[in-house]
Amino acid sequence: MTNILKMIKDAAGMQKNMKKLQSQLRAKTVEFSSGNGMVTVTARGDASIAAIRIDPKAMQAGPPAALEKLLLTAVEGALEAAKKMSANDMKGMMADMGLPNIPGLGI
Image (cartoon, rainbow, N blue to C red; front, side, top):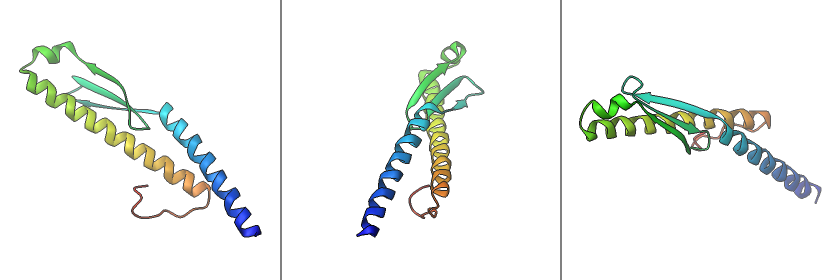
C-alpha cells in the first residue's frame, strides 16, 4: 500500500514539474531569420509564434512567391529551434528528477 501512495505522490510531483516547465517554455523565445534577415520569426518554447518581422525591402525585392518562401523558411526554422529548446529543457528536467532519457519520446 505504501508503494502505491509513493507512486501517486511521485506522479503528482512530476505533473507539477511538467506544468512549471510548460509555463517556462511559454516565456522563452527563439528567433530564426531567412533571406539575410529579410524575414525574422520569433517562436516560443511551446511551439507558438510570438512575432514575425518582414523588412519592407523584402516586399519590393521580387514576386510574392519569393516572400512566401522566405516566410515559410523562417517559420519552419523558428519552430524547429523551439522544438530543440523544449527537448533540451525536458531532458534537463528528467535528469533533475533522476529519470532516464527514454528513446522515442523526442526528448
